[in-house]
Image (cartoon, rainbow over all chains, first blue to last red; front, side, top):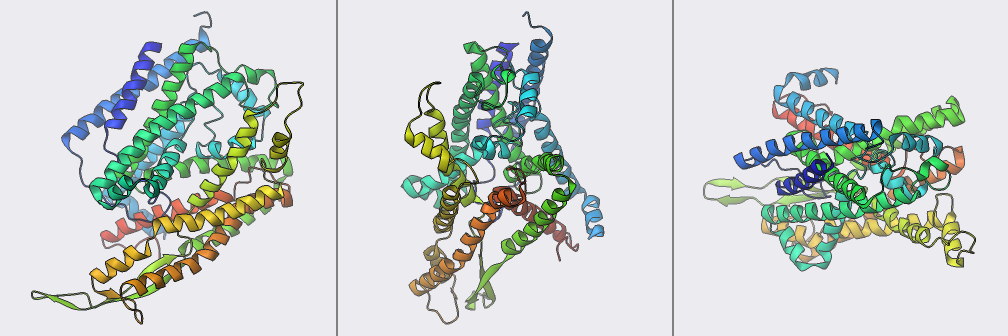
Amino acid sequence: MQVVLGLTSLLLTMLILLHKGRGGGLSDMFGGGMTSNLGASGVAERNLNRITVILGLVWVSSIIVLGLITKFDTGL
Amino acid sequence: MFSAIARIFRTPDLRRKIGFTLGMVALFRLGSFIPAPFVDFNSVQQCLAATSDTSGLYELVNLFSGGALLQLSIFALGIMPYITASIIVQLLRVVIPHFETLYKEGQSGQSTLTQYTRYLTIALAVLQSTTLITVARSGALFGSSGGPACTQLLTNDAWYAIMLMVLTMTAGTGVIMWMGELITERGVGNGMSLLIFTSIAAMFPNSLGRIAASKGWGTLAIVIAIGLVVVAAVVFVEQSQRRIPVQYAKRMVGRRTYGGNNTYIPIKVNMAGVIPVIFASSLLYLPALIAQFNQPAPGQEPQPWVLWVTANLTGGGQPLYMALYFLLIVGFTYFYVAITFNPEEVADNMKKYGGFIPGIRAGRPTAEYLDYVLTRITLPGALYLGIIALLPLVAFSAVGADQNFPFGGASILIIVGVGLETVKQIDSQLQQRHYEGLLR
């Protein structure tokens, strides 16, 4: 389980870095600046989204399983 | 007003956007409660209950993560790495010419800059999560007031467990960043600032309840009343702007007429937003951090400068700290306005499109005039930022309320700023469909 968590964490970080960044920096973060809508995203981006969501689910569930293991089975 | 709210939900597009945003925010809050692996959830909760006031050192960071930091959850770092990364990238524009050219390049250059920010965010997340976990492992996270349970926060402190925790928290920061971007793309408002907004708002009930418990309901009522007044004042100042009239000359291009209309350049009183406050508090946090690292071994006399720093520069009530804080904010306001608004560029653009300010020649005189107006209008803006940021510190000594007085400083500026911005965006979406908006 720990290996799974380690692998998914690494992969998830990589995948998120692959995404195209939206929204530029601080200037439009705290008021000011106009946020331009960049239109629809391409097919690649959509597939990337799907993979990222699935990987994220695996990641969260492995964290929860690991937490449950450490809670109920201290002798592991 | 209420019919406008009903209309928001009758517009399918807007309804979907708002639903998406709310769902993401809910996921974000949910994740802040999942403890990271190998964290002893029970002893963390005990320590949180024991140390009711967060030690000043982590106050700001904890504020930005919505209390997730001290819970050592998977989203413990929150958006702080992203904020720091974007501040760094923005400041590097002044230092590195390559960044400046990228910034001026327009859409494609700016997306490269965003990409740099994202890489830097992950790097900072690794750094900060390592620091956080090391501090938690040594038992210093909750200070000395926590009791014996607080030194045993981790169930397993072998090297691979530490590695795994760092990896998990880094991935968590990445997920938050992605969620923020998704909100910006498909939801309403700017995702990152909405997530900050949520974190800060999530702290409100907690700290209000603490004030009620320790000082009674009368004080709570006073605090809320002061808060409302401050919010009204902040909205007033945030909306106020000086409008410099600009006249565009009428031009004929082919058979069409362009220009010939009157517009204005809006110059806001507080152009810098909250960023100076964030800068100043993170800079003032450095001496306290250095002093923390130079604490002597038990039984030894601390060095005199460490004593001086802890006596003068660590907390809210100290006059030197307040004075420095105020001065830094005023200075940073001017600095940041100078970075974001370039009078020469604006004057150049106006000249290119045949615009001029009545009574002032185009070109350099215009730039000088804009600079003059900007410098003068920033002064009240800077003073206002300083006063708002000092408010929690003053209230602390006056009402005797908690240090975590919720209506002041960075938090109120962020709440009001983000709220206004989001409402404006919903409003413009409504008006696109010929409906009357939320704002009059």
